[in-house]
Image (cartoon, rainbow, N blue to C red; front, side, top):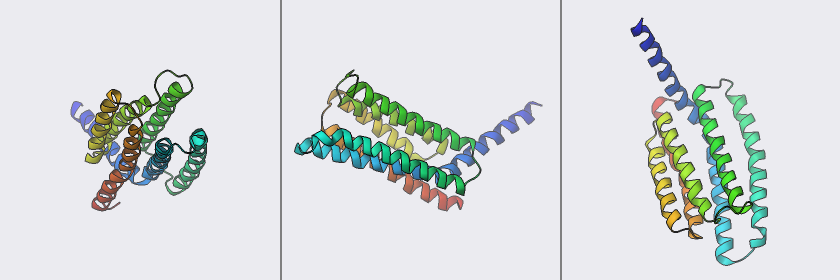
Length: 197
């Protein structure tokens, strides 16, 4: 009885791992879209602060980015759902991680900018801490080395900018968001070719 139970548990774990591999190939467009869009917005925000131009429009940029991003994300999700009728457990976990990270980072920004709980430049450290956690968890699910490496870079940046908060933390954030979107994408494509997906 114990052997059959152990075999069943192993087959369930194996199924989750297989599901997670296929889920990432079809769901990565959401992550790439949000990370690329946010990286571009952060870079624009950084340039506005450095050059001192258009600062009064900074809030409007983020409202526009959030509105556009949400609308496009809904369209993208509907398109992906039409392609993939089957929803996997691993896919649901990955989606939950992405949504949780997004909400947490929005709340950090709200706490700083609206509630004035802390210096706005500390937001980057807070975001980096949460993104490091998310990438580490995903690296365990997906078994992708790039996710684990990126998680440690996020955490290193978080620690560094806790001690040295400032405008250049935005440049780090923009660069890391772009890297976080496209480096794993390249590794995913490599694995997709390997597994024939």
